[in-house]
Structures are given as structure tokens and as C-alpha cells.
Image (cartoon, rainbow, N blue to C red; front, side, top):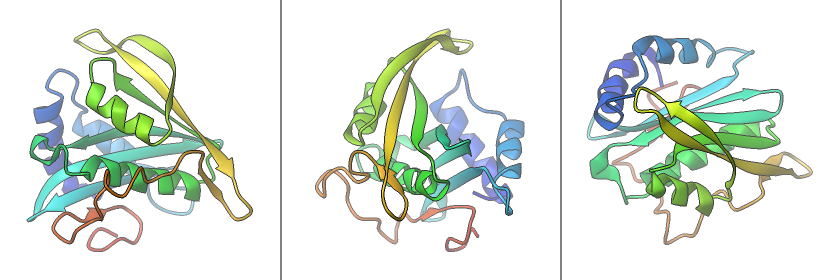
Length: 184
């Protein structure tokens, strides 16, 4: 994600999360930590036909990753785009040498919870009233990354099954902040 992606991302954010959408300032603040040698963030967007159809972000500090946000346009639900975004974020967690990755998900968002479970995330607790102003609880989930001889990888397969996750297509590429096509 780059600065010019913020406006279309905000439009999608407001459509998907009208009560608790992030502000432009929140995205600007996150992107400020996504560049350079001391980067602690990885933000990416997915585009289809020139339109932003998904985005995600990861913060990594002290070997712990935290998926800050991940979303796909409603017309992309069921296409595997969410899984591709999550795969990219988990790859970033590996690059940041994270030992675990955490996330919060609305307790009423069963579709997202199933996606995270397919990737090996397990529930570890709740944050009461986390999503405001609706006062909706968050389920906290964690994926423990297991070390290998070369790097860390998720304890469960980072890619569910071939049938559950279609391969990335040129029609909906995922672009990030660090060296990916057109966005880096």
C-alpha cells in the first residue's frame, strides 16, 4: 500500500465497517512505519481492473506479529482473495521473524473466523466492547509460528488446500509496500 491507495482503501473501509472504520490518519500513521530499514509494518492492497478490492496490514514488534486489518470487497467474498491477503501477511510475519501472530476479529464475523482457523489460528480470549461505537466484542486469535533452520513458518500450512485457495490471477494482483509490482 502506498499513499495514493489511502483514498480508495478508505472508501472500501467505510463501506465494510461503517461504524468503526479507520480514519485516514490511522492509515497514514501505519504507512509511516512501513518503509525503510526500521520498518515494522507491512501493508498491501489487491486490485482488480484498477479498483482496490482488498487490503491488509501487519505490525511486527519483538517477534510478535499483529494483523491490524484485513478486508475484501463484498463482491470478492468467496473468491480466495482473503486467503491470498492473509498468506502475504503471514509471509511478512516470517520475514519479520515473528514467533507468533495475533489478530482480533468481531465475534459476529464467522466467515473471517473460519478463514483464520483454516490457517491454524486458535482462539485465546476476548476483548469486550473492542469495536466501537457498536460495543461489539472481539475474539482474539493466535497462530504460533514454528522455527525452521532458515526461517519461521506458520505451525499450520500457510496455504489451506489447493481447492480452498485459488492461485493468484493477474486480474487481482496483491501489491505491497516493499518491491512488489506497481506499488513498490
